[in-house]
Length: 220
Image (cartoon, one colour):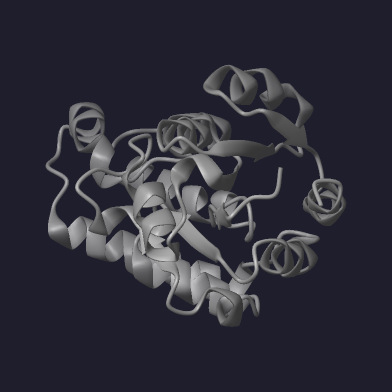
């Protein structure tokens, strides 16, 4: 089966941003009165919008999640990303192969805010592949695990969800792709995460982003 469109998540799939963003979040939550380890913060927040966890944050810190706090988080996050962000190994080759497989019908569909997604793609030299085809969950009625951002991306490309391939790395993202009717392949560099991704509906796991070109070539 050849896919009509290929839709990539961003964080953790194309860029290695999760430890950076969650490190800033962990520090700010500790400053607000909620202490977590780095692993705990990743477990609670990876794949989610910080604003979507407002109730939890307010309950654990005893403080309101204000616009000023969020602006400070975004500012500190962006500084760290600009200084430390790296591309996921093999992502350039994977995106080029997806572009060839789907005759240019590729998009980036992320749960993050548009500024962050576009800044990151530009920083690692991937933005040219996705210019005009970046979709943010912040701009949808519902963010992941709802399918809205993937449905919007597929519709923009003129592809049916059932004829699209989603590349994800979290259970929340996999759930969103499956809910959109897409086939979901999960990038899983950490073996222990595989069962959760399969339980969410991923039909294939692959451990290196550089493996994606060969997996797509096998479909032709």
